[in-house]
Amino acid sequence: MSMAAAPPTRSSASRSSASRGSSSTTTSTPSGVKGTRTAGPVSSSSPTVQLDSAEFSTGSYVDRLFPDDASLEGVDVAAENLRRRLQAVTQDIRQLLRAQSNDNNKQQQAQDLEATKTAIGELYTRISEMKAKARTSERMVLDITQDIKSLDSAKRNLTHTTTTMKRLQMLIGAVGQLRHLKEQSKYYEASQLMQAIGGLREGFAGFGRVRQIAALNDSADALQRGLAGQAFQEVERGFDSQGMLIGDARVMRDACLCAEASLGVEQRDKFVAFYCDLQLRAYLAIFQLNDDVSQLENISRRYAWLRRILRNYSDDHAAVFPEHWRVGEALSRRFSETTRDQLGEIMATRDNISVEHLMSALSDTLAFEAQCNKKFAIVVKPTDESSQTVYVYEDGGEEAVTFTGAISCAFEPYMSIFIRGEHAKFDEMIRKFQREPLSIDNDPSLS
Image 1 (cartoon, rainbow, N blue to C red):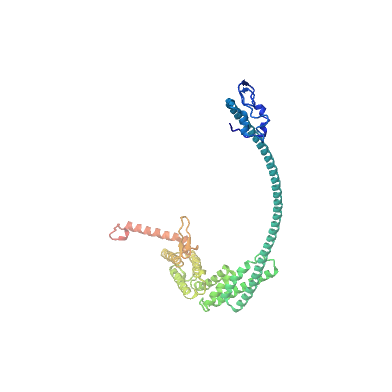
Image 2: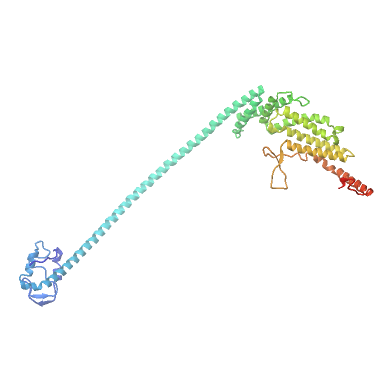
C-alpha cells in the first residue's frame, strides 16, 4: 500500500532524532520498526534511506512501514507522525526563508545605503560643478551687462550729442534767416521764426558757459530787440498825429505779432499804451478842466466821444491789433481812469455843486459802466461764496476786471451833497404841508 509523504529536505535528517517519540507502548508494528507503539511520531526514515535523500522512494518507504496487514493498525500513528514531521519541516523552511530574507534585506539595505551614499556623492559633485558653472555664468553675465550698460550710455550720449548738434545747426540757420527777414521787414515770417528760435534755445539753457553758444544767444536777443523796435516804428508810422490810420493795417498787424513774439507781454503793453495815448490826446484837448464842456452837466458828451472812438476802432483800427490784445477794452479803461481823475478834480474845486447835476452825472456814469461790461462781455462768475464777486469774460471764462465803479467811485466823497439836497426837499415838503391842508385829491403824488 502507498501513502503520500512531505517532500524531502537535506536538513530534515539532522532533525530526525528530535522528532522521534519518547513514550512507547507494546503493539504490533510493521516490519523494520520496533515492536513498541510510540505516542510521538513514527520514524520516517529507514536504516538505509533518509527522507532528505535523493534516492528516496515513497512506495518503498511505505512498504517498509507497512509490510503486512497487521502493521496497518499503526497507520494513524504513522500518519500523525508524518503530519507533525511535515509541520516541523515547514516551520524550518519558513525560518530558513525568513533568515535568508533578513540576510538578503540587510545585504540589500547595505547595498542600497552604499548606492545612496554614492549617488549623494555624485549629486554633491554635480551640484558643486553646477554652482561653479553658475558663478562663472554670473561673472560672464555681469561682464556682458556692464558692457551693455557702457554701450547704452555711449549710445545715449551720442544720441544727445547728435541731437544737440542738429539743434545748434538749426539755431544758427534760424538766426541767420531772422536777420535776413529783419532787413526785408517781413514781420509775419519773422514772428513765426522767433517762436521756433525760442523753442530751439530752450535746449541750450545749460550751455551758457559755452562761448560760442552764448554769443549766438546774444546775437538772437539783439535781433529780437531790433525787430521789436522796428515793428513799433512801423505801427507809429501807421497813425497820424490825430490818431487816424494811414498805414497798411495788415503789415502793422504782422508787426504787432512780431513784437509780441520777440519780447512778449511787455512789448504788447507798450503798443497798447501808445495807441491809447494817441487816441486820448484829442480827448484831453477837448475836455479841459476849466471848460464848460468838461463840467458835470455835460458828462454825457464824454461818453458820446468814447462811443465814437470805439466805433472808429471797430471799423478801421481793429484790423491792426490782434484780437486777444483787447485794445478796445484797454482804451475804455484808460478813458475811465482819465475821466475819473478829471471828475474828482472838478468836484473838488467847485464850491457849489448842483444836486440835479450831480445825480444826473452819476446816473449817466452808472449806465456807461454797465454798457462797457455788456460790450466787452464781462459777467459775474457763479460761485458758492456770496462774500466775494468774481468777474470773467463770457466767451472764454478768463478772469476779468469789471467796469462797475471805474468812474462812479469819484462821486462817493460828494454824496453828502445829495443827502443835503434830499433833506432840503423833505423840509420844503413839510413846510408846504404845514401851510396848506393835506389833500391827496388835489395832489396825487402825495400818495
